[in-house]
Length: 550
Length: 87
Image (cartoon, rainbow over all chains, first blue to last red; front, side, top):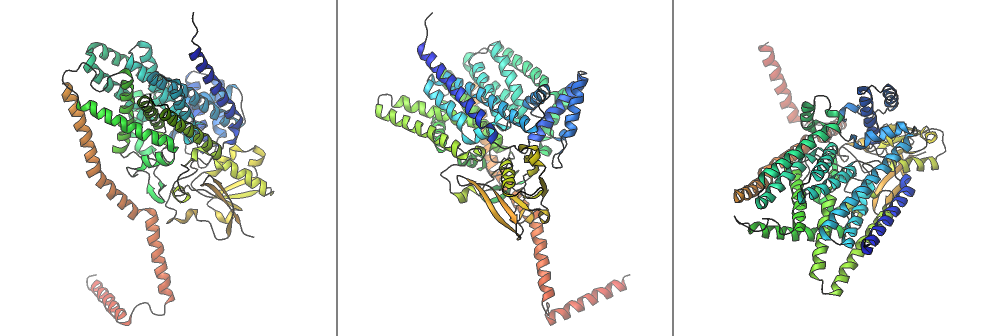
């Protein structure tokens, strides 16, 4: 047997890279705060574990979960039945781990979930690497894509919060098997695709479009292949497994699946919040966001090189696609919209990305907290960016100087991401492009997850030795949930009084308001308070502390 | 069949886009305007404005001009008498 030293060297390089990433994250994990929905996710996991325990007659487990559910209380938390439809993929196993390993420190439970969330993100990055490597057959370009995937500051910051990036992770794996299945409609690929589609669907309802895109691409491919019966059989097979996996991994559907499934769609309108969001220094309704909302957010909160590579890559592909479309004839010896396996992948990615973008645009999808609901778009941004670099390298293959210039920009992009991650730590999820002025940045929402609560409570406990400190909150952020990020003995020191400022010793203020705070004065700091501290990270104001004047 | 499929998709996408950027855009704009006018904060602002005006009125020695006061008085008396007649 002959050893492939080139491949082996690359594998070792990748393993070292992943080990370093894991170690770095493990060391810095507890720097991050607790986000405002942790409590709800824990409750969700325990709720479904209790349901399963009851269903299968596991009385001990049922009793433990019941006790734990009763212990979780928060006056700002809606009943679990209001939001229990989604996301058991991580919540339920985490609740199980919490009970099996008898983890009682709530803070530790959250950090464990952060670590699992990141681990899944790391695993998904390998699938993204494989998508790129299968397409471009270049280890270094694929590795660069993998690096961008992992180090886009907002995405990396959110990867610990196991919400939108968890969907991104599962979507990436789904996309990998999607591309594999398009290339080879094997039973294994179809089962894996249906499995991961079901998991993605469990996390975000709009994954329902994945099977539709799958059929659409197979139909287009079949114009050339002309294997109707085989393709129809495979589609039926895929749907059968998709239904089975969706049902198995979604306890919500176990009783009365059809009606519950329909309810998922009918309840969207009521379940989504209806708030005001800060956008270009104006308060706008989150259900009436302008058409430019998504693109603006993507551009202002993604590293500039990533954006530039994407724009060029996407524009180039549109030109190629336009050319192919115009040349479609009744009888062609090639596929209509692509000429090679690589181009087939480009088309698939283009179709999914563009369709999703237009679906969100044309349905006036409501958004809040920036573009976090569609963080999975980052996959496409990087893919088209790498596509652009691939084209450039091919175009300038004879000019060493020009190739080196491209490498220089790649190194610049890598350095910039590392710089951004370090300077924003541990607030990478609030990253804004460094080229924006402070005035522009302050015109957008900041710490919507309330991650700064941990820093705030630690700061106050350092500057005030009183046994009991009352905290007012001039923000929509439910600050008291952040108390779980600090030790229990410190937690007792704080009493959070919300907007009852007359009772407060200190007031916490960040840039989050669900109402137009210029007209509604509920978050206005009373005149008997003065600012004593402000946490700012690279032009981004995270939060402020106001103290009662003597 | 194939050409029909591609043309149909193109027409469908173009139609949706045109609809969104014409009628859809108009509806969204009206909704946004409507929302900003009757929002809770705007109503609060209007109430505050009325309160301020009333406060100003109370502070002034005479808020209504003498001629206006006479007309308003006559008008109220007229309404009163009409209401009495039709009781």
